[in-house]
Every structure is written in structure tokens, then in C-alpha cells.
Length: 356
Ligand code: KG4
Ligand code: ZN
Image (cartoon, helix red, strand yellow):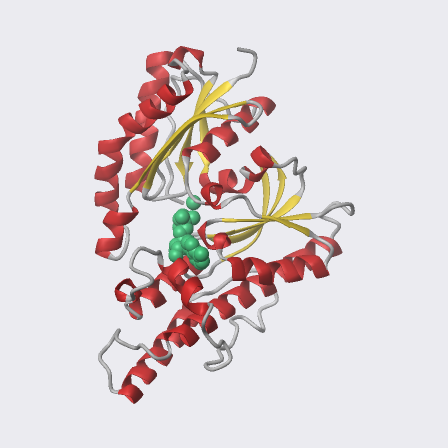
């Protein structure tokens, strides 16, 4: 085989992922064990539970990715694993497994930054050159960064409190959308997107956060609080029990989604203007990459695209499967690092994992 092969391993939060990717970005094998269903029952990720599930699944997940790719560990060029940021207990399982694996098979080890991996996944699918702007929005992250190179990122802004997906999940939970006939199998964000389609976003107007803050940081806890108060008021007026509103859930979903979209678009617009003013983006075909679970929201994409088009920036969103946590993005980041000879360690080096 001419092309170099990287095994990628991801355990930073609640997904155990592994994949074998070659230098051209071909996925030879992949496996993902999602813990979402377990965590949905408890209303959030409980770290020791996540750790135990990673522990139970990691060996099988890695073996599945290798088997599917028909690659023997001896044929690998390196093993790449998320070492930060994430839940310490979760990270530990992946890192400890990987370090045993590279020692056993005498392979180089490539420590991976989870957010950098999210940001670069797009390059596995499209020929996007550095530098480009990236907006990452999920249940755990919200950030704007300028990707200048494989290991060179300029952080332009991040959330000062919770991530947008977290705010959407909390609103969905407060509305008990799990009991809604159309939403029982959907994540909070998906449920809100679906209900918002038949909602009137002007019925309960909200203010977009941070209207006076002249930077690119985000805040979503205010939206969540405003919506919670709105729900309480409606419940009181209709005289119904908590979490049993029926008549106006579509309108509440629509205003929540719109306000999240408007906030993301305003901050992204600021970032584009900042990059332009400082000549940080190429003048020909500047690109905005939008990724993370929340990026699969079609309404949010549409609103972001209006801003991008207005500023002559092309917007790219990887398919949903590559927006969320997986082993493929970690393997691909390993490939990118291997190609440039950056951050490759011998198997004997002890690598710490860092939650932050
Ligand atoms: O990237 P992801 O799978 O996991 C991490 O948080 O790392 O993102 C999950 C988040 C959840 O908060 C979920 O509610 C949100 O993404 N999400 C959506 C949609 N699909 C998933 N939010 C808005 N619209 C969607 N269609
Ligand atoms: Zn992630």
C-alpha cells in the first residue's frame, strides 16, 4: 500500500469512535458507539456513566474499524487520539487504550485537539485551503476561529456560558417535547427545528443577546432563561401544569430557533468583518465552514448563509455525520499532522489528557 494509514480514536464526551483513514481521505473502516440513548434518560451526560460505557465498548469499536478496513495494526502509520478538551474520565479511557495499543504494536502516537479535528474535517471532503473561518456549534461547543494551518488556530470568540445545542436541549426539556407525538425520538435541537416549521416567530419576540458587546463571543443562557420565563407565563395564563403547554409550543420553538440563529449570524458577521479589516482571509474565495450538531439545522444554515453571501464568503457545511463526534475526524487530523510531520510522538512517550 502506498498511502499512509491512520487509526483515529475519539472518547472525549459520550461517543466511542474509531476509524481508519488513508492519506487521500478515504475512510477504509469506521465504527461508532453512541451513548445518547442512555444519557437522554438521565437528562444529561453523567461522567462516570460515560466512562464506564467507553470502557465497555472501546476494544470492540476499534476492532470493528480495523476489521472493516482489512488493515492489520502492523500496517498502520500512526494512531491518533483525542487528548483534549473533553470530560477527563472519558478522555482517559481513549488515551490509556491508545497508549497500550501503540506500545504493543510499536506505532507513533499523535495527540489530537478535539476542536481542531472538528475544524479540519471539511478538508477531508473539499479542497479548502488555509486560512478559512470556522464556526463550531454543538451541545458542548460554540466558537469562532480562523484556521490558519494544521496546528495554527486564532480563536476569535467562544461562548461565555452554555453552548447553543445545550440551550435548545434545555428548552425542549422544559417543554417536555419527549412526550410530543412528533418528537419522541428527536434530540432537543431537532425537535425545536421540526416544531418551529409550523410556528410564528413574531408572536413572542426575544432580544438577541450581547447587542452591545463588540466582540465575537457568544451567550446562550439568556435566551434559555427568557424562553423559560415565557413558558412559565403561558402555563400560568392557560392554567396548565408544567411541561404540558400545547397551543403555543410551535411559536415558542420558532422564536427560540430564530433568536439562536440571529445571535450566531451577528457574531459570525462580526468575525467576517474583523477578518476582512485585518486581511486575515484570502481575497479570492474566502470560506466559512460551519460544523457541529447544531449546524445540521436548516433554518440556522439559511440565516448564516444570508450573512455569508452578503459578505461574498462561501459557506460550507460538512454532512451531518461528519459534523458530530466520530473517529473519522480524529483519524483525518492524524493524517494532516502526519503529512506535515507535526506532533508525532514515539510510542514510549506518556501523554497526559487535559479536560480544558
Ligand atoms: O455535535 P453533537 O452531536 O454533540 C456535541 O454536543 O458534541 O451535537 C449535539 C447537539 C445537541 O445539543 C442537539 O440538540 C443539537 O446538537 N442538534 C441540533 C439539531 N440536531 C442536533 N440543534 C439544532 N437543530 C438541529 N437540527
Ligand atoms: Zn465535538
